Structure formats: structure tokens, C-alpha cells
Image (tube, rainbow, N blue to C red; front, side, top):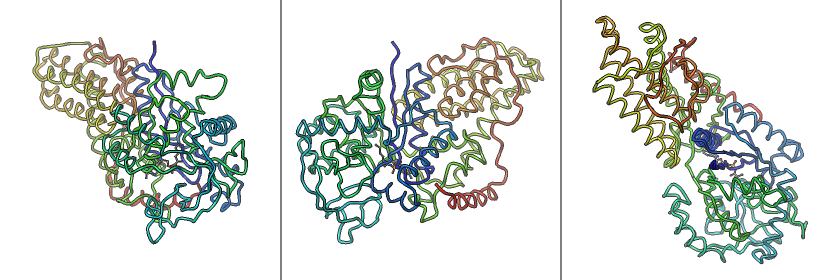
Amino acid sequence: MKKNFYITTPIYYASGRLHIGSSSSTLISDALKRYKKSLGYDTRFMTGLDEHGQKVEKKAASKNLTPKEFTDKLAKNAKDLWAYIDCDYDYFVRTTDENHIKQVQDVFELMLKNDDIYLGSYDGLYCVECETFFSQSEVGEEKLCPECGRPVQNVKEPSYFFRLSKYQDKLLDYINAHPNFIQPEGKKNEVVAFVKQGLQDLSVSRSTFKWGIPIKSDPKHVVYVWVDALFNYLTALNFLNDDKSLYEKYWLNSEVVHVVAKDILRFHAIFWPIFLMSLNIPINFTLFAHNWVLMYGEKMSKSKGNVIFPKTFVERYGVDAFRYYVLREFPVLSDLICTPEDFISRYNTDLVNDFGNLVSRSLSMAEKYFSSSVKRKEIDSEYISDLKNEMNNTIQVFHEDMNSFRVDKALQDINKLVSRTNKLIDETMPWALYKENKMEELEAVIYSLLEAIRVETTLYIPFLVNTTPIIFSSLGVTTGTIKDLVPYETKEFNITKLSSPLFPRENDPKKAIDEIIESMAYELTQEA
Ligand code: MSP
């Protein structure tokens, strides 16, 4: 039977234009989906928009639009962006979808029925930008949000509360019993330390504004936006509808991964599993919490003018170069400080000099020395058997890295193999073998180069989504899958030379950096 894989991004607030930071969660989810698909899994990749709450309501009003008019526009923009950077999602959830609203209303009633929710009154502090309640000690004397630094509001209103405290020990037990539940390890430790300080009951409804999902049994209240939003992962599988086939397939019988960034770790590692416990739904997911993409060391923000939108890089260097940079530098354990300088250096070094050059040189040699047709030939050669071992090792560590969300390392694994392959050219000097008419040895070398390129291209499938089909076709082989990847299996290569370089060199990085900075400034003036 096919194995199933369900991967989700956070649903982004429908409040502004998505930048390179927000794209990072979507890109890694896309790469992991493509990896699992290439392994033969039945995959479902979901993303979407978080459209309710005070923050969205305020932003819409500032544009003289109704919230729905505003979020319709942003939903279109988000879909256009994901298409633009080739993120191949299967379903786009919007929290204003009738299907989502209906199920969230049912969730609330079920929790009320279980006595996990009670009516009280909230008197405290709230950050609209982060849609988060804070205690006095968290905001300090100045009453500034500990997350975003903006002033928090005093909120006093009737509110429903969820009994988080009731589940504190159960959650700690769950985390202990499931060591891979929260990854990486450091993020798990943060969560455990936080829960051990003691969980306060959580306000789960708001009654002083309207833009949310009304509670069925008490429509003066709307559901707190985080409860509304977290359930997207299940409403999109119709978990409370009559037809539960998606829920059965992609939740109950699936590997499930939620990708989030560190600022929303607690919501996903504490509230979400507790809500599932309340409804008796298996906590069948792994949480991967990554760090941020920063620009010149600071969190991207429009007011600081340091936001990079994908378009700035994509229009100069193409989608694959953009995907490559973000995933090769992916902020798993520490933040990624993104600069145009680093982007260009990565591009010129890894994609132009190392991989692009290897492919074009090898294809040219195959054409020149063997009229484009190269058959499998193995000879006794230390260099070739070393390269062959390296191919096998690379495939093995590549799987380990992809399965622990280390796309950055997985790309380094491939790059090491690319270097090893380039080294074979220096070691064997094919042009000298040709001169000496050592055609058998020469064919074994060229075959090994092409075979290594085939292996590298197959492993690049989740990342270089436009370039890999071009290379397979130039090699004259069918597009492979990672599942069936065995080195030295190809019988024959039938080469077609590339019509243009895979990655054209950036010859004037200094000028390019100035132009990128100009483009960033221009993009900042554009509407969401
Ligand atoms: N709407 C909530 C998520 C609800 S999920 C049930 C939300 N939205 S958000 O738009 O503010 O952020 C969505 C994700 O994008 C978060 O994980 C956030 O950290 C991530 N990023 C936003 N800026 C980022 C960077 N600069 N770098 C990396 N990720 C960033 O929170």
C-alpha cells in the first residue's frame, strides 16, 4: 500500500505582502513534499490564509475595504506568489471558507460540551499585531509586546476560556513519550521549559469586534483567531464533515508534518496538541520549527525598509536560483542573514561554477569524443570506484538529512558529490586520454561523469524544479525518481547539448548588488 504524507505551512495572515521570510516555510514544505513524492508517497501539501481577527480588520479599514474585499485580494496575491516560485500545493485553505467556518463552530460547541471551555471575563493585555494575550510581567513597565515590540492594548471584555491548565501534565507526558514530536531538539526544550512554568487558561473568544467566526451558541462572541486558525489543518481534511475520507487518509493514516517558524512555536506545540486532546483526536503530527530569515541581521519590516520580496531575486536569476539559495541557507538552527552579496556568491559558486559548469563540460565532451552516445563502461580505476562509493554514500546521507528537515545539509551533500565529480575531470584529464587514443578508459570516465550528473540531478528534483527536467532531457534519459535511484544503472546516454547555460554567470556582482538594492526599494513602494 502507498504511504501517505501530509505537510502544511502556517496559514499566513492576510495582512500584507508576503516576503522572502514567509516564503521560507512554503519553500521547505514544497521541497519536502516533492522529496516524498519522488519516494513514491501519496502526498498532500497545504497552505492558505488566516483571514480573521482584529489585525486583518484594522488593515482592511485602513485601505477603505471591507475585510472580505481585502482578504480576497490577498488570497489571490498569495496564490500568484506560490505559483511564481513553483510551490506545488494541493489545497489552499482560507479561514473565510464556509467549510472551515462551519467546522470551527462545531469544534467550539464540542469543547463547551466537554467542559473544556467556560465563560468568564478577560481583563488584561493584548498585542493586535501578534494576536496574542500577554501577562503584565511579559510586557514590562513600558507595556510593549515581547514579540514585536509594539505597544499592547488593555482589553476588558466577557470571554470564554479554555482550561489549558487541566492538560499541562498530559502534554508533558506526551512530549516525553514522543521524542521526535517537536524538532529540532532545542525547540522542544524551550517548549518543555515553558510548560513547566505552568499554563494559564486561555481566552478563546473576543466580544469587542466582529471580524471572526461567531460562536453558534453565543454569537456575541467570535472565536479567538488562533483557535480558528489552528483548526485549518483539520477542517481542510473535512474532519467533522460526513465524508471523512481525506481525514482518514491524510491524518489518521499518514505522516503529518506542520512547518512553522519559531515565533509561532508555542501555539503549535502547546495549544494545538491540547485542543486535539480535548476532542480526542490523535496528535498525529511532527512539528518542525525553524528560525527566521533576516535582512542584514534585522527582522524584515516595511518601516525599516529592509524587506526582500522574492521577485527581486527571481527576475534576475530565475526561480531555481532563488529556491536554491533559500533552501541551501535554510535557517534551521540559527537565523539566516540574507544579503544580496551572499545570494550572488552562492549562485556564482555553487550553481554557475560547480554544477552548471560540470554539466556543460561533460555534455560537450560526450558530444566531442563519442558523437553524443555514451555506453555503460566500467574499468578498474581507483578514481572511478571512489566516485562510485561517493555516490552511494551521498544518497544515504541525503535521505537522513531530508528526513530530519535538514534541507541545507542535503544540498551540501549533493554539492560535495558535485565537487568530487569535478575532481574526476582533473584526475583523469579526458582530453589527454583522447589524444593518447585510450578510448575505453575515456568512455568509462565520461560515462561516470554523466552518471554522477544523473544522480545529482535526481537528488536536486525537490529543489531545482525547472532545471532538472532540462538536464534529464539533455542526458537522453527519462526523468528518474529518488526512490529508484541506483548508481551505474544507466545503459546508455544520448546527449543533446544545452541550448543556453543552465545558470548564466553574474559577471558584475558590484553592479548587481546596487540594482538589487534599487529593486528592493522599488518593491517596497508597491501595494500588497
Ligand atoms: N497566521 C499566523 C499563523 C497561523 S498557523 C495556524 C501567523 N501568520 S504570519 O503571517 O504572521 O506568519 C506566518 C509564518 O511566517 C510564521 O511561521 C512566521 O514566523 C513566518 N515568517 C514571517 N516572517 C518571517 C521571517 N522573516 N523569517 C522566517 N519566517 C517568517 O503567524
